[in-house]
Length: 250
Image (cartoon, rainbow, N blue to C red; front, side, top):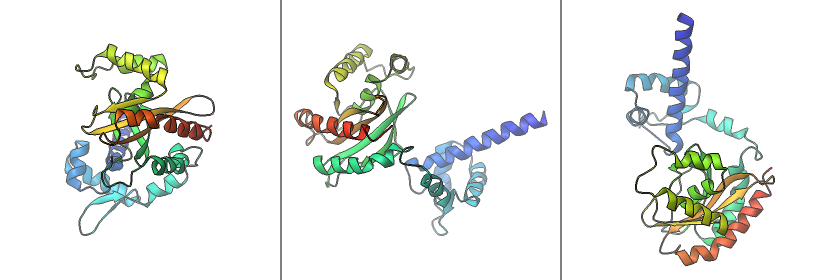
């Protein structure tokens, strides 16, 4: 009994420590209180976990502000990712070229369960722009990139998304299915104000050299610049960029 109990406690501690590290996907610095609220644990438990993570170099604490941020160990681990293993690193130069060509924010999304995750972004340099935090997790039922990831996924994935118990009642499933068919026919998806008021996006599928869906490549910005006509106009450029990127991935 003792061994089983210790094993369960060890797994739970690891899960909690990883939850703490994941808090920094959308924040550079966090206080103990903020971390405690994010992971839903009391401060004393979080403090002990933070002490361990800090001691091993995964987190560092500012001596004056008492805020935590990622430590050098995280960067050491990421340095061992090869470009072949990490399409986000490999494709960034091409994303920057597309950003410079179109003047809007370029994002790369992958599907993770019933969510999409932004794994890379080249933000627009314009004063008013679409900010794209890396690591952001978003639902699959709204947004151009979400629909691309579902439209080009296999039938089992599509069924799983449509059967999601958290599917919002205000989105008609049949209308959504019809949109997926249209996306496969056109080769791209667009959205205006679906997830965020005032924002628009056009997205295309990115396939690797074996023809497998890897990610969704998206261009996003304010809808007064990315009108429906404008997105239709630039869609061929985005599709061509996705083809070039796909040839770089095995």
